[in-house]
Image (cartoon, rainbow, N blue to C red; front, side):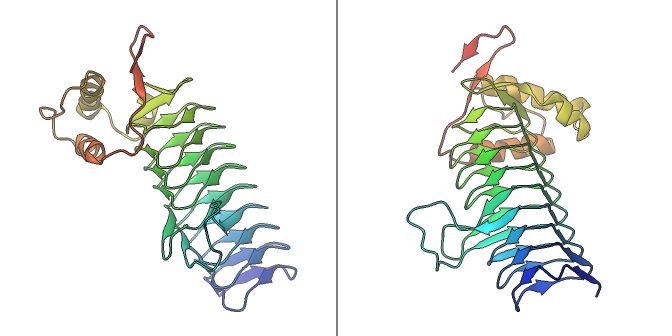
Length: 261
């Protein structure tokens, strides 16, 4: 079991380390932390207690995982968790907080990339393959789907949902939900169109793309999706829309640029 641990690192006695772990100078791993095989913890990075990570995660210098929720009613003795999957990259200054609820979880999937100084608040759920650009900050209980791209400086209000394959324009403020597969931006934020580039990269083309294009027009005109082709994407979209929103949906802008509520 190869380990590469700098002598200045501070590691609690009950930390669980997988094979081929690298821990840099002055890094801190608190009691009960679990790291899977091949994880790398950079200089001055901190993994606080109640954090469990899968394999292949990379923490760059000064990243902090598992901090206390920024909730004035939270009691530090509460047992709650931050759970991370595999092969995530956490760049410099990234922070993620554990849940604010007893035995609750903040959960980050696998294959995500979090750029410098981005933040995941307590009780959030992040899907797989999602990217947070620099200075993205999401509030508590936000749900982010798979393969979402969130541009620099975006801020999301607590309890918002961002559906899979969505793309958020940089510096956008989100106070409502973002429909899967779509591009959102502007001030106030609006749904503009399908995330064409992201969908093409994901192999969602041809009839599958056409079905989503039809769905976008129907949603925009407040029409049901019942008669659309039953593709995997349409099934997911129907399931996502069937969940009662706590924030409502951002509006739309038609091709002429006229705003619609």
